[in-house]
Image (tube, rainbow, N blue to C red; front, side):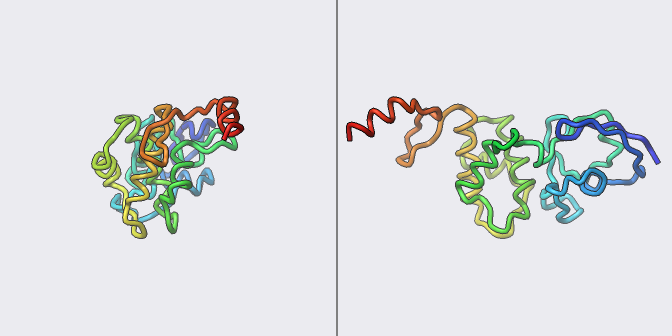
Amino acid sequence: MTQINVRVDGMSYTDEVEPRTLLVHYLREGLGKVGTVVGCDTSNCGACTVHLDGEAVKSCTVLAVQADGSTVTTIEGIADGGTLHPMQKAFHEMHGLQCGFCTPGMIMASIDLLGDNPDPSDTEVREGIEGNLCRCTGYQNIVRAVQQAAAEMRGTATAGNGHVAPAVVDTAAADHVVAQA
């Protein structure tokens, strides 16, 4: 057994693990972080993607001992209390999921993508998530969700007509416009 110290979703943990324990199994079985799913165990699907020291990694390819002294963020750690992360919100609003199995890893990979490129084109989104497989969708709604989250995270939101509008709405002005209509 090897002792590790790791910070996961804002909490510090010190645990004894078998040196061959994969990070995905430590997160799920040791810490109860079951939102990080086991997909293929071969690093092909990306369903187990988490952030390790701020970078997206497939947790089925990382040993828990390799995370010693690191910070891990899982899908459970990205919401702010009861407020969804903009990427979670966008996946919900844009129907970027069907069965939902790939969604945690897809969201984590997409957040990492926007950290590197806050305003990606559709092609750049598709290339940025290419290590994460979805067997249910045609990816179009996933791309739309990433684009919507990107706009929100940049402080803009795309209006239904394709124009970019401020993400923060002046409700007093909006009420005035509605009252005059």
